Structure formats: C-alpha cells, structure tokens
Length: 322
Image 1: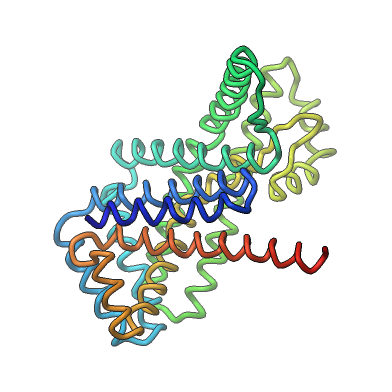
Image 2 (image 1 turned 90 degrees about the vertical axis):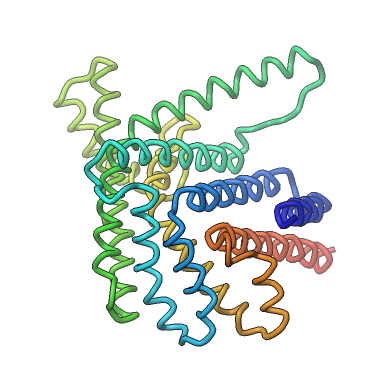
C-alpha cells in the first residue's frame, strides 16, 4: 500500500514540475530521485534484521534527544550500514565488486546530469530515421564517456571508499566542531584522490596517442591549472564537449551517501517533533519495518520541495519582469 502511495506522490510531483519547468529540470529531478531511491532500497535489502531494528529504534527515539546527539550518532549507524553493504573487510572481493557496481551506477547518474545540463541532449526529431540516428549518436557518446569513467574511477573510487570509511571511524564520539573538520578533510582528500586518477588517465591517453614523457610533462605544466578549474567547474576541457568533472564528482559517492544519510536523519528528527501529524507521517514512512527506505523517501521529499520552490521562483521572477 505504501509503495503505491509513494508512486502516486512521485507522479504528482513530476506532473507539477512538468507544468512549468523545462525538460532539463525534469531530467535532473528524475535522475536524483531515481538514484536516491535505488540507493536506499539497495541498502534496505542488504542490512540484517538486527541493524534494521536498531536503526528503526534510533530514528523513533530521536525526538527525545538533542539535535547535537542525533548528528553525532549518525557516523556510528552509517558505518554499520556501510559494513552491511560493502562487508566488514575493505580489502575483499566483496567490497571491490560492490564498489565497482556503486561507481558504475554513480557515474551513470553524473553523466546524465552533465549531458543534460550542457545541452548535449537534444530530443527533437521529425522522422523515424532521425530518431534512430539520435539514439545511435547518444549511445556512442554515452558509451565513450562511461567507459572512460570506469577506467578513471574504478581504483580512485575504491581508495576513496577506504578514505571516507577511515575518516568517519574517527568521527565516532567527537564534538560537532571536530566532525565538521573531519568532513572538510574528507572532501579535500577525496578530491585529491580523484584528481590523481584523472591525471593518470590523461597520461595513459596521451601515451596511447603516441606522445612521450617529455611532451606530457610539458603539456601538464602548461595546462595543469586549466585542467583543475574545468574539472571542478564541471565544464568541458579543451575543444571538446568532454568534462573531467564527470569522473571527479563521481568519486564523491561515499561522501554524498553520508551527507544524505545525515540530512535524512535530521529531517526525521524535525518531523518527529511535529506532534500527531509528525507521528502520522512517520507511520506512513513505515520506519518500523523499512527504516532505510524511509530515510530515502524523506530525502526524495526534500529534493522535490527544492525543485518545486525553484519552479515557483521562476514563476515569481517572470511575473516581476514582465
């Protein structure tokens, strides 16, 4: 029953967005919602009944705790969830395999967002032949980016998985200030790991095309800063439509997962203070039986509200200016 209600609510949100927003916003929203739902649903399927029950109890009792306590408890439950999904040992085939799957899916999401927001997807055709050509064209483009992404991200993502897990293990039992510092350190280290992988990929491509070490070093010195800026700015590099930011931001999978986990738990804490209405909403989310799906749905609601507010802001701006 709850799944049907969720589906109806998502369809209603999609319709409300479609009324006034461009197709770009719909694609962005659908990509985010689909990714979040797939992630938390996969987590729900991976955790054992003991962790599910303890997480449920933690979320239901969040209202009687201070916000600071709830925030500081989050790394503990996240690390246990992480172990359930990737295994107790980071140096294992299970962890490597699941890291590869996570990297693959996250690269796909980032790739869709990049292609969509850089107007590289033009869904217009006047004949079946043009539609066929369109599909072939984007399939080739997507396959190229996706293949390079796997090469560039497989090892860096696996290393960043180590790094984020280690950082969060240091965040257990600390103060809010130290937690914030650790999260900033995580962002920096993950970025450096990702950039190292990108430069290794560039070197391999350079040598594959017949370049030598001296030419590569010379080019690297000349274009180092522009590579960094275009990567972080999520812009195309050089004379192509290609952005290294696809690989860079895909490496933040574990960090983004934690931020969503933290945001959702804070939102559940807020909902739980709303009295009877809050209790009804939490009951609808089925925190007792599916706490992780509940966290995912809370995150989906939060993201959807942001998109709806963006839509109303566009309407307000258009009314003010004419």
